[in-house]
Amino acid sequence: MDPSIPGGGLCVSDKSLVTSGTGANLYKYCGRQAGPSQKLVLAPRAGISFSPVNKWVLRTGYGIFFDTAETFEDIGSGNIYPYTIRSTLVAVAGQNLINADNLFPVLSAPGPVTPADLSFYEPQSQKRFDPYVQNWSLSVEHEIFKGTKAEVYYAGSKGTHLNSRGTSNQPFDYDPSNPLPPTARLPYPNFGLIVEEFWTAYSKYDSLNAKVESNVGNLNVVAAYTWAKSMDNKSAAASIGGDAAGWAGPMDFHRPQLDYAVSSYDIPQRFVGSFNYKLPIGRGQRVLSQSNAVVDAFVGGWQANGIVSFQSGFPFTVTAPDLDSYNSAYGQRANLVGKPYPNGFHRTTAEWFNTAAFTQPALGMYGTSPRNFLRGQGENNLDASVFKTTHLGEPLALELRLEAFNALNRVTFAFPDSNWADSTFGVVRGAAPGRIVQLGAKLIW
Image 1 (cartoon, rainbow, N blue to C red):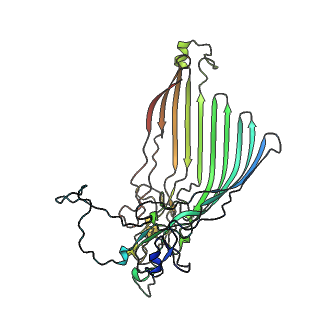
Image 2 (image 1 turned 180 degrees about the vertical axis):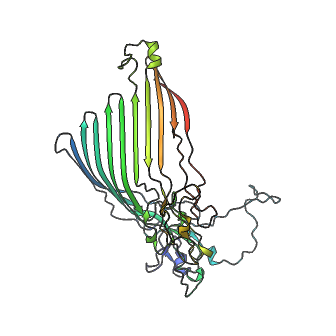
Image 3 (image 1 turned 90 degrees about the vertical axis):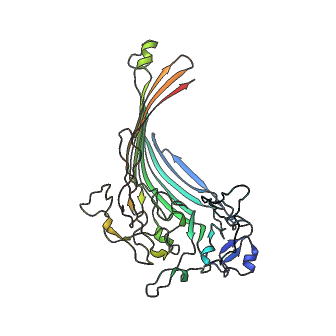
């Protein structure tokens, strides 16, 4: 629904709703399917690879990649033509249970229908856009010595017409000098909640990356570092991670730009290194290369592996109640009145950030703190394993594995309680699993 479009907003498949004038010109007939799609969908891609001198390679590329647009994100009988009403029937102890012979209760005379009862969830869109992303990159690769190369590259992207949602019947701004209730500030006062899908979200990503790969002898090593920033006004239609808006879209439907911030999956810095090393012991290796089958069964075929990772924490939003639902703001944020990490502050599980830096917004006011303003704990993890391969004669081999995830048993805390109204505001109440060790065996033939 877009009130700025002349002639209506909410797309429906029933012409009678339009011709009867029901809904104060709210409806617009869009046929039996979603609104018309884009007519011109071009996805050009180009890349260049150039070696100016020996052992140096320059690469660059650009491409546009389209995704398909959903007709409905949540398919249900109430969302497709002909529209129906979905009800939940609950069996109550002491009364007749619902069974195949009594699926529907006897309905008494219905009461009056109020505007709050007239709600829509994911109606058809007037215009269906195909989401697309533009990707571009520039890299320089160099072979340092035989078996080892390094690469430095920039990668960027821009997402357009990304899937989003909005509570399009959210009340207009509250004016304390003219304190109207929410029902008097609705764009469509004869309706209640309206949740629509849009293809209006957008994103921007930039990153600088460095990578080293080495394959020398029995040792293989890969190490990569990324310094990046991802921005958007909605990271997923239904929200992810610490994004408080959830299924309802931006905090303020009339000003979605207030939600433009780092993405819910933004990680400014990340390093990952991995290795696997075949011990040079046993038949055909540098040590005990002439060992017999019995000796080789014990000392040969050993391999050590590891993956180490360090990264920044994911962002989250500090929320507060929408007093008396005056804004119908499902992603209401707290007011920012101080520094979350003042000088001398030490972060603990009892107070992950300075809780005094946030306050409750006044009645009808939106919170001033940005979306995804703070971050959880970063990652410091080592996964390690030891393999032992024993040849049982052609063509059989037995591989035994000892694997440890989070081998150093580092604690990774969950997000702290970010709701200002909770008694545990700022407190960390959970953590990821500790060390996990497993044994495995694989028969190879």
